[in-house]
Image 1 (cartoon, rainbow, N blue to C red):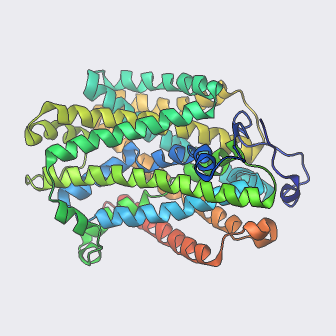
Image 2 (image 1 turned 120 degrees about the horizontal axis):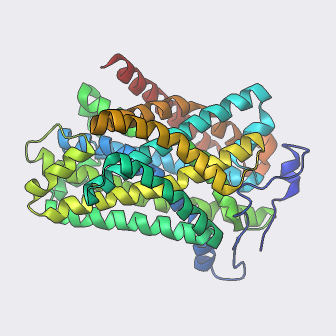
Image 3 (image 1 turned 180 degrees about the horizontal axis):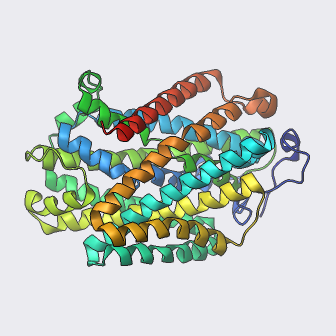
Length: 448
């Protein structure tokens, strides 16, 4: 049963006819309102996993590997703080999506002048292509490590996952969510086995979640910590989350929306906890294997793969590492292409057939990846991966700041506006994330 948003709050934003966000998914998941609390909560589980994959994509692996190999378990506290920031910002996304019946891109189009809106759209599209580029490269590397497929061929093969997305989306959003959640648990299982083989010092692991002053006083630690924090929030996740939460037929009255906001927040927070476990597992594995073994400068995915077998003592360790990388890459490309649809339709009101939209997004990412891989090989893809993260650093403020503006807008959201404590912590987190991204970007540009 499809449930359209309550027209009352929407009228505050625009007099135009109501446009549904991700119309093929909108209100497609029925909520058993007469059932018990657990069954109602279960109906809301899913969108959070579509979001959480952005926090454990191949672009995040490099910082976790570098942090664990160089400084052991020390930077686990940074991963924890990053996750807490992400939980709050994604909860705000769920709030405004459910309260207004609009996604972040639609809200920007309704509120900002057309030149500003077009600029935000262009930046969002560039960021999504950069995100897609990083996932594409990660997937191609995994195919190369597992099956020996040349990188350039692996890059081209990743275009086929657009067809998988279309097929699953036609089956229903729950199928898409099940695939993503299943791959996330596969990644977690791969690293759980690796942790058992790595045999880390668990007392030191727990101590690593306690912030250390050395993170601020040691420039090398600070720089990697900035990299971990700077990659916390992926711009496309903010747009996507405000849209996918509307796939639930939660109702239009205030009590139903309040319950939907609460359940959606639980869903995203639980999924982000799983992402934290995965990121922690990558860092712990690097600390227990590479740092403890004297290899303190491991930062590239291929290097970590090659060192795992001789240092752990079993070839299965490297295989599981590559399987996890492939699962992460496939997952992240699913969410990036969905975010592309949200951004184009939301900012421009332009509707394209899903197959065209996905192929356009993928082709924009594939073309530079194929060219660089062909000309420079593995070293070129590593540099392209870095470039994609720089682009995301540049775009992040233009997604987070509008989110915070809408979340605290009591004139438009009324009783659903975020409470003061969330706004204070949210703005503080935004300032920290933006500042650290700018510092990281400056370091990359200046070669420091």
